[in-house]
Length: 208
Image (cartoon, rainbow, N blue to C red; front, side, top):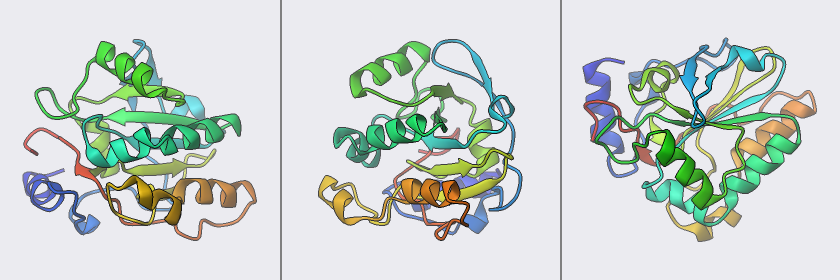
């Protein structure tokens, strides 16, 4: 990700707006998802390749972002995590906030957030240099990705169809991740495979 791309992210996403994803390098739907190696909140090194054969959901997070709070304070995110994991998927929360910026946590802080919000994810990954976030073109918190058991990216975009921080909108919105998972489980193509993400900008180095 270039300085220009980071500047675009800062300008366009600082207030929860959405920018043209063409400005940011990101994997394409139907292409292999980038492998990665990151520590989790328990000190284990986790890679995408270790979950070969299983569906993987990636969720970019920032505890202090009101758009993230919308889905955690309502329980929507935890419900989606619980169902996906119960169905055999792997749900990985990724934090790419750089040190000193909103939402940055170390392993201890991540464990505290997990306990406060009752995360039902498989693991919480720490990406303080933003390497994995940039590889995926993650722009907002939340920003969601679904990777199938063959390592192919099948969904990327928003968590739902109403771009707001209002919990009341959740019931009215299409929840893209459960819908995509259901279609994949049925052997069908994902009908909404590339949607517009919304939320706070991912706090990479150089992005406020």
